[in-house]
Image 1 (cartoon, rainbow, N blue to C red):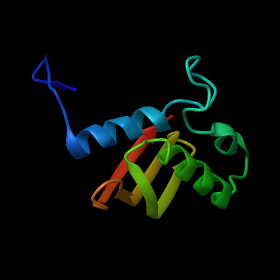
Image 2: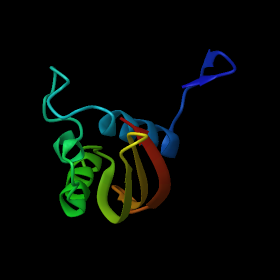
Image 3: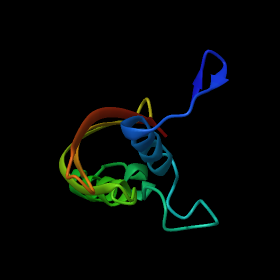
Image 4: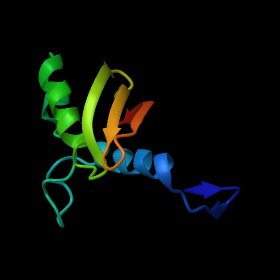
Length: 108
């Protein structure tokens, strides 16, 4: 992460959010070192998006982050014109069972 032109070490929730961003912006099968990492974009490429299949794909991708135990709530908005996936979520993190909630927009 850059701050004022310098690299900044991040940790905690910021690091988890950055990790989720990397997973969600990587097309599944794209990264040659681990083709199972990433989001399955196939549903987003269809003329009519099946919201339930898209939801399952996003949950599968989010659970690739090893610190996430469970996805409790997930609201998805797909803006085809902007190629933006807007997510609102509540996650249970492994370990203490901490609840982590947030909003995120992924540009594809």
